[in-house]
Image (cartoon, rainbow, N blue to C red):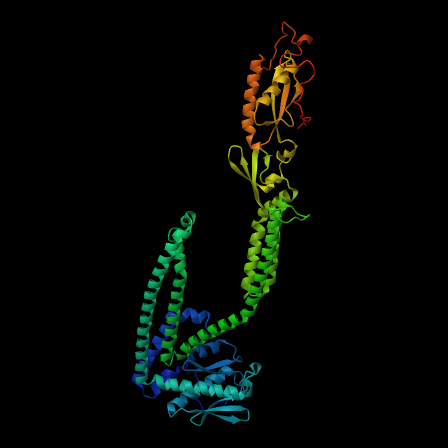
Length: 597
């Protein structure tokens, strides 16, 4: 038994119902039918050409034609809610079963009944009338269908009366648009409005292009002129001579594109609204744009309190960071004296504490950043964290090694050190690397992990005890008195200008080899950077002194016993410049005892 939702319909044979075609054919409007068919086809082509991607993804699905509705109900669950659509405009949604008829069957019956009403003609005035089971929808006083109590979307707070009023308004508008689609004057007027709107669109696009060209040229010229004066040469090499000016034009270009897209969007919506069949699509485009702007405005307003709180956190953190930086800069400069930190550790401690403060402020402000609770934002955070955890292991190792060097005070800027084969003056100790300037005027950058894993010799740390110790050695045969050799080495040291005399130079017999004695001269140098200069001058004086006293600097080797014994008789123990009043060469007056290296 079919639902009694209207006049007795014609038997439904299961074929698709084309309301416009059937009306035009039965009412004898052959010309109108041909014109109407052309209009509908052009509307669909226009919509597919300009709005297919938008309607398929972002926009809510517009009202479907009755053919699509009938095809969809054929494969869908017949008991599911079904939309009633007339002339591409949604009328209402039927949800209830009526006399054993499903919502899809009720839609089919209403469609057939509407065809009969349209064939009959008349003013097509829609009205409503309360009935015990709901509200009746009438056309020219004749029952067309009913809105039952179960058809209302009660979960959304909709009542039967509200659903019936909305259905009556939508049906009246659809019938009016059907009448308009058969009016040749109205269609010609719509075509004229479309041409006018298209002309205005091209005029506005032309104005945008001209304005963009004018503004872009002015901005490009001004920025390029100023950038050539302010940007250094290396910056121009990186981005090019006009790179900064080109970047300054990007916001203008973006604004021009946004304005162009908005104009085309509004033109498409306006043109679609000119024609009755595509008018629901145009209204949908307007609603989508207004809805998007409304949501954007609401989101901006909702984000204002959070942004204000983020700004407050930023300014408070900035104030605290400035105070912390000023304190540690004062400690580094010696203006502030505290027991728990000195000038060498003040700089890294300040940087570390400032980084911790900024991280804490970021954690505190994170929940108030707009979009922080979105899945995309969380995904980006996880991705960044994963990349840092994978790629920053070496950086963390270097940073920890740098902190060890700083807080153990193994190296300080200005000290003369030797690490492995690198020897020179420390110029900087950073979190990741340490720079050393060698005696050959070459800057060597060493990773901090390398310094931690190797022996470091610091020649400047004990400079207060007399300076850096330098040693040089000679090997002399046993037939030369050792007292004479010591005296000659000390004379050479006294002649060298840059050798400190306090503590005085010292000569040690460091080895008794098979054929000769090894003498080591220990001197002090006030400037470690002058190591090679001092050694060069000292070696020159050693050769001169040995030549003056006729002692050859040789390391004899024998393949057989010599003819004469190689020894020093007692009467030859004190040859010049050795002195007989001491078993060793006396240190200069007032000199302190030398300190062995």
